[in-house]
Image 1 (tube, rainbow, N blue to C red):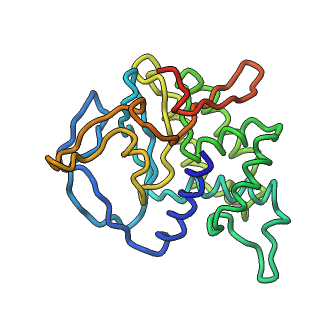
Image 2: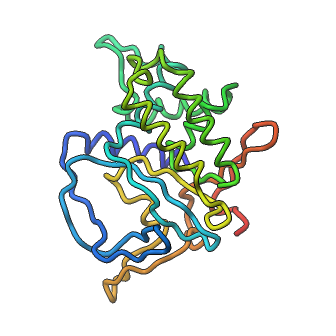
Length: 247
């Protein structure tokens, strides 16, 4: 889980000044309006995007929606929470450090602080921005907490959450989560950036012999890649590794 977070930091740091070349789909297999990524076709993407992924009852994943400019959600959450909870650790003799540019050590410190936070909106947005898997039955609660995060944290990170285009992005993601058909897709995960293919490879791989894309399920994974976020009635949170989840 924290390994995933550190990997995200690395991807943002390495790619922020590049024009990434992404592997995207050529032929799209559709289930309703949901796209099952992907076949091989290369194109240049000038700006990274984030995306909402839905997971069906067979634990197969589908990219539901893309959001242009991935810097408008997850990195803002990280910077806001870092300033709010570990501000002193960000101060250096050269100025204030960005947690997005950190090697990962500060993420571990911040994670510990967030886990003991009294604010559910901070905890949910932290986990949502770090490739954790949520139950769709909690979609209304999660959407509400995203909106609350944007309302309650306007004074941090140069008042980023007071900017109209940032508020619009948070509301857009909250609205899309709230509209998930939980009967068809009982789980969802938010992918913070397109500069890696972390989530895509939860749900498929390229067959080395045939060079064909083979669809797989999250339950087929034999290594730890995510945790299911279990929100209890008293708003406490428990985590279940994909390796221990009862599929």
